[in-house]
Image (cartoon, rainbow, N blue to C red; front, top):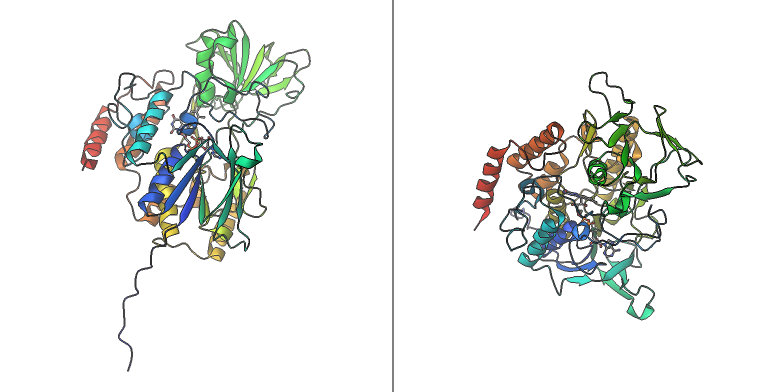
Length: 491
Ligand code: FAD
């Protein structure tokens, strides 16, 4: 007689002991999601406080201001004193912990209730998030830098040896610790290793050069002639900041176009609002006599060149060959930008995808980024669910095939390698919206429609009012909708 058919029993949840590297926004939300799923978590943070990039420090890397040597002593944060967010707070925060003024980051005598607040307000929000979800002492180990991550013996990826040192005394062998974890979630941030502009003469130019990673305040540039390379958010912010004290600011942009004739090499022009800022096409060459020549032939003699040219991915603690390779800002092979197929789910990466779009506007290029905090949240839910067995992954072969198909497709489409994780450059090849895809894996709510609408509205506002979009807007109805939504989240 045939056995009565039975419904398959649900998988027994696996509780793992996970290490999270980094206590910035990605590491904090990863820790929360792992704990929610029942895993035990240790967060390693090399800094003396949580918050990652949002911990402003006046310190900078004075010995290597271009950040060329990857083994230099690194100051993690690239925040400058005057920075205000480039997204409205309602959009920017985690999806289930609203970043609203007067709560969830607001409140207190020194609160910054602006819609596009300064960096200190974001840090306060992250500290409150950590307090709310118990990501503190006992979970986060401050001043512990992870220096090596390697699979244990059998190489199955089922357990990982994590080596950490005291960040203030890295050479102290007696303070080095090796611990074994079932899983490692990498959340080390991607805004500390500068990318430098490359043009003839840049290396031998006799003047001073720095990367925006090491910019803090405009005062050092008083009465100087400054060439600033790059016109994305940092470049645009810095040019206006520095123009307040400098003699002249010359911005070289790869992407400034004249909206009328679409001429990518639009000739040098003075800025419509700031008389001591000039916008130029890209630099043609830097010369031994101290001059800098732009592609339209305009020549200036600057005191300093500031590279506002972005960052590259850097994972100095992953030394074991074969886990992933990092080349030209492309981390490979990864299944859906998170799991190396051969080691999944034992090691995972949060926060690699970004979405960069260059929006051309006369004299201004806005570099639109994706909604990072919600993305970190969704990726963390996915990783936590996979680790417990609640969510399954395809086989290693299928994941590898998927990753390789994607790499072949971007190559065939002529997408540069450095845009592997740029959701906008690869959108047509990836099909679904990436956040929606991850949310579907987790069977959870994706990015809310009001949030998407507000993101688009703030993007258009940024184009229409490149200098004032942080204080003038017209999406008040969406703000009301957002607050209605936040109120509905309260228990
Ligand atoms: P991070 O915030 O960089 O945190 C990584 C953490 O890992 C750090 O605390 C670091 O100390 C720690 N760490 C690194 N290596 C190790 C190690 N080996 N061992 C132990 N700990 C380690 N995003 C927005 O959404 N809105 C904005 O307005 C915005 N403005 C920005 C402005 C600037 C100038 C910059 C640089 C970035 C901005 N961003 C903005 C992006 C910002 O990076 C993200 O908001 C966010 O901070 C990224 O979070 P993360 O946790 O991935 O990385």
